[in-house]
Length: 125
Image (cartoon, rainbow, N blue to C red):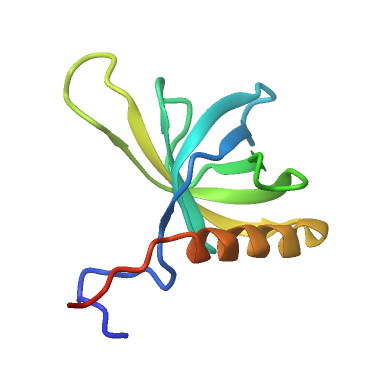
C-alpha cells in the first residue's frame, strides 16, 4: 500500500462512536467524550472545553455495547485543534495509545477486526 507524503498513519481510522472516560495526569477529575474515529494506534474525539494540552498523558476507559468489557489504556495527546475561531467552539483531540492493559488487548483487537469486517465492500465496476 502506497502512502502519500503527508500521510503518517500506519493503520486505517475507523468511524466508531465509543464512549470515553478519561483523566488527565494533572487532575483527578473524570471527563467524558465520544470518539469520532479509532485505530490500533490511537483515537480522535471532541471536547467542549480545553482541558487537555499537547503531550498530556491521559488514562482512558473505552466502552461500547459491541465490547464485552471496557478497555483500559494510557495515551498521550498528540494534537489538539479548535474547530473554529468562535468563542466556545469545541476542540478535536488526537490521542496516541501508549499502553493498553494486557487483559484488554485481545478484546480491543477483536473489536477493531469486527469494525473492519462490518465495512461494506464496494464493487470496483
